Image (cartoon, rainbow, N blue to C red):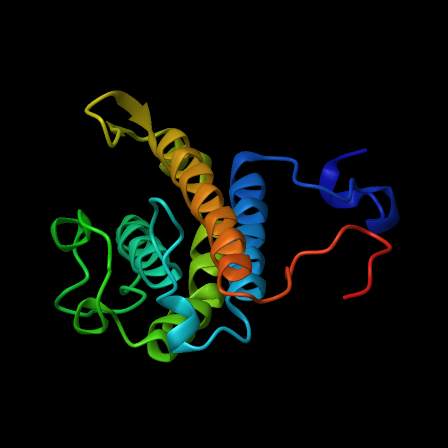
Length: 181
């Protein structure tokens, strides 16, 4: 029986191809970022971990820069087209208020890009995913390989937002099954 003729109940629950897998990964990235930044104030976003590390404001700005690149690869408009949001402006930590980005605007723009991003990922064809390109460090890859690398990168920094949330004195937002939400 062909895939399209099977009943919905016979289909696997998880992703079955690269486009579905990438969509699933980025849906998870969005959920982690949204939950880890929920209820954080601008002041919370500026709390610096010690002795070293970046505050949540820097982390979300960095995530936004990389997501702007992702959106460009997908043929979508940027998450937030802010003149200071470039890789070159984020080499140093944000340590002073005047270096910071408006937290509420940045967070809302990031979260609002979710549906556009996920829809674009679901439209990727096998041919588009197989397209040869250059990876972030000059290595040869495919579109699927690059998007997979970006998903890992975004997940890594989404986890840092969880730590930043706790450093700011807020309760953890991602709970294990069975824990109170």
